[in-house]
Length: 461
Ligand SMILES: Nc1ncnc2c1ncn2[C@@H]1O[C@H](COP(=O)(O)OP(=O)(O)OP(=O)(O)O)[C@@H](O)[C@H]1O
Image (cartoon, rainbow, N blue to C red; front, side, top):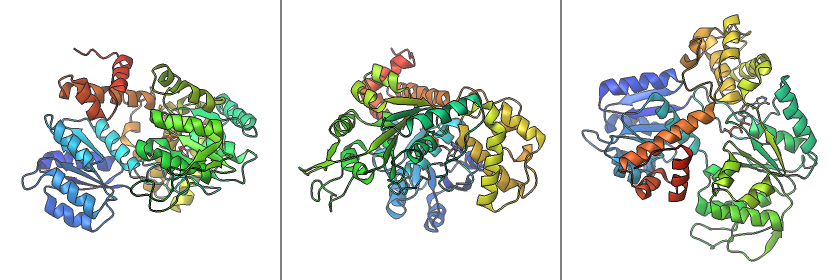
């Protein structure tokens, strides 16, 4: 269970935050000032610090700097007032994972926290990547944090699942590059692993790379390796993901996040089938099959000039769209059983099953987080049920009613788009509609900001 520490001098607000986060599966401690909070931080194990920017005896930036020095593994989010954007931006430059401006909604807070926890993963290569059989611990969902899941999973019985399994079986033995699309948590990485497992390369490595986590200026060295001394920090020769995946499959997740320059470099490597380490002059031949995944509309990114068309076609020799869970209704009982069994194993429990109304709710709920959310809901429920059948009372609050909260039912994609739209609007408002400043604040280029303003049809004076 991720541990969050809050520093907030407004006791009522701090209490409200704590209660909300606890209900959502985090372990929370709240302090009115820096001193007692630091003592707790020094005891270790804190995943995230959420601190107010303005505190009576100290300021959030100082606290953050000292936490980053002593506990670099703890992510820090700064809570700011409406007019403190400049400070918030500089806090991010100094190492804060993110900031959130008050007033904020619980949903916004959840998103920022989940993103900050996700970023805590080391950049790029996912844990253990490079071994023939590995997975990642990417599911930074609240309660309980689960071990990485490298199992082939199961195939459902719905028409959509049968079609998916058929496509995987068809394309796996070929050399084609595959583009997997689908909402977050639908099982794109599970599908990529299954393509690898069913391919002729199955004995070779499966290297999973989260392109969204690699800083643009490090990407070339991460992908292609480097030669000692080629840049500050290159203390020894290092191979990159391509070489690590030799003879196997290189899985590039969130490929839409690569910068334009990195896209060019990737395309070159795919065309030439060789890589050159940064600072080196030797072309190293590579034999790697590429599988990519995205939960963005990459075709739209191509149309909008954010993603190179030639690279898109290279990556997309065959595309597979992974269906959202709400479109695989017939699979729900099967996944419910499967995740129950997994959770019992993992938690060493003997939870016998579900009460009828829970199964009913599973089939009416929209599952915006798809299979990942399903797995987490079941694991959490098994933990809370203590070997009794799972009842409604151990489901998350958002699932307790008969109807979903307004945004659910339209898919996480929309939740993200809504969230992004709000962030863009808020950045524009905070910078008095100065697009250069707003783009800087959002850490995107002006061109991308213009594209997004058009996409969301925002009215900008
Ligand atoms: N076929 C499956 N059988 C069993 N469990 C599955 C299956 N597919 C996905 N899952 C569960 O859902 C979790 C999320 O899957 P995965 O990481 O592959 O999703 P994703 O689409 O790559 O997500 P993201 O877009 O966020 O990277 C897995 O860890 C696994 O627990």
